[in-house]
Image (cartoon, rainbow, N blue to C red):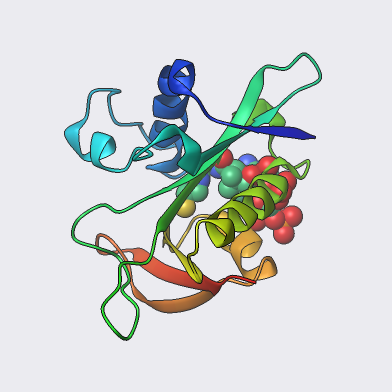
Amino acid sequence: MRTRTGDRSDAAFIVEMARLASSIEGRPLPPADDPVLAQGLPPSPDTSVLALDHDGRPVGAAWWHFREPLLVVTPDGAPVPELVIAVTPAERGHGVGRHLLDALITRAARHGYDRLALNVHVLNPAVRLYCRTGFVVAGKGRGPLGVAMVRHLP
Ligand SMILES: CC(C)(COP(=O)(O)OP(=O)(O)OC[C@H]1O[C@@H](n2cnc3c(N)ncnc32)[C@H](O)[C@@H]1OP(=O)(O)O)[C@@H](O)C(=O)NCCC(=O)NCCS
């Protein structure tokens, strides 16, 4: 599985991934121009990683952002970057998500961050992937059924 840094030409794909990540499977997705969705997009292209298929087409993306109100802050009040991840439905269950998480963790550590946070719906099966990759529950997340999780970076 190849990955690469996102660039400006990936904007439409990232919005599609943000739509997938903002709802649990089988529920309606928000419109592409949803203002809440816009707040959770990558602040700059180098905060995103794309996974590519054999033909170089993107099949998933992960990035971080700092949407207000912040999900998690460090004990001394510093904002913790919030991860978003999604894989196209046909490519799920084959390790793409794990690969993207590993790539984004490496990138966030290089940017000087010592932890990553995420928000996940309690019924989202993605919780298993997060637990397997070292995320632990850090408290209440966004919305009534959101859970915040955090992982310390190497
Ligand atoms: C969550 C997601 C990114 C994982 O990507 P993936 O490529 O399927 O992940 P991997 O193959 O590396 O790992 C599989 C794990 O992902 C989780 N998963 C979530 N939805 C899944 C699906 N439709 N098919 C397979 N696995 C899924 C499971 O926990 C699975 O772990 P398990 O093998 O213990 O059951 C992907 O399923 C997805 O895009 N889901 C919709 C968007 C979303 O919910 N994003 C997260 C918001 S918090």
